[in-house]
Amino acid sequence: MARLEAELEQKLAQWRSEGRRLVFTNGVFDLLHPGHLHQLESARAEGDVLIVGLNSDSSVRRQGKGADRPILSEDYRSRMLAALRCVDAVALFDEDTPLELIRLIQPDVLVKGEDYAGKEVVGREVVEARGGRVVLVPFLQGFSTTSLLARIRSAGDGS
Image (cartoon, rainbow, N blue to C red; front, side, top):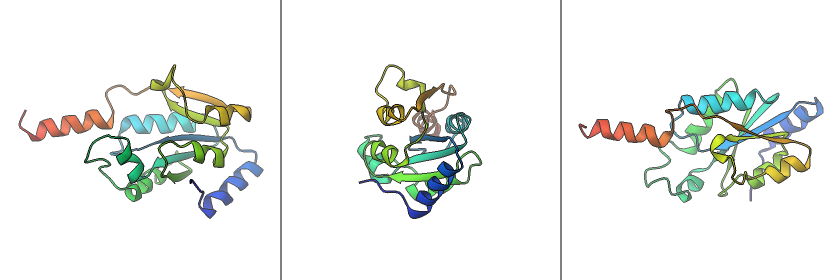
């Protein structure tokens, strides 16, 4: 079951009391790359505060991305995200989807990549029930962790 750390709960209460618009996005963010930065900066532009839901290591492994994923541990991935100027808070979740985390945070805006066009966006109902909205951000072409790993692996085998 998802839960928020006390520090984040306090920040959320403060931001809400100040009337700030809360934006939420989520992902694995393994091997942080320009595509990730584009998604995060685009998400941040949709409101006043950006909260990033980060898949835990066990959640990533259940996604079937490969035996070597995540490349970096949840601690390192969380620290890198938190160091970005556009990110106000990082919340780890162990479930397969961020739905419980979205219910706890109650964001005003939910941001996902454009690959969700025509698909179910987890948490849409929670956000829209409060009068919020879902925004799909275009991808920065040529960047994905999977494609970058493929390029690294092919360079390592002499191809």
